[in-house]
Image (tube, rainbow over all chains, first blue to last red; front, side, top):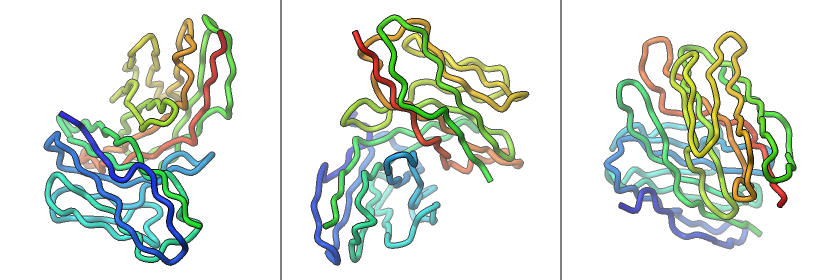
Length: 114
Length: 117
């Protein structure tokens, strides 16, 4: 049981390049999330997927797209990277039981856009 | 909207000192409250949680009590260790008036804790 896994761990891009961050979970969770973490700002939600086949915008969706490929996988795509997207990206998944929900996080992807 | 405010850091303590990290929140509905910990170079791990007023979450010697009257969820530990050095995040998940989980966490800005031997 690996939990939530993310690839790559680290990436350097030039402005304008594109890339996809991969996330997978093996806990059979319905919901998955993408956050970015910036110094002094905590984590901010980019997009989330409440269930397979659905995605919704979070707090900071501009410049990103997502795909919920199946129940296990939720990818985040940067079509044209900008220096403002330099950040650490975390994927999370969750399951709700008895109206209570707990999110479990991956190890993160550190992205540098030059 | 929902928000979480944590005490500003960084916090530096000597080993075996008492720790308090303050957290207050504003929310609509019926929030669940969480503390997450992030060790250097790692992702976030759930430390403890409380789902209703007066609940106390506890784990690894850390405790936090859900205080609805003061909208607070302060993190405490009686005797910190060097291995507790990390970033601590307070967060809430708002179930909403209809009792349906929105499934989205609102985080505080994080508090850096450094414990010296």
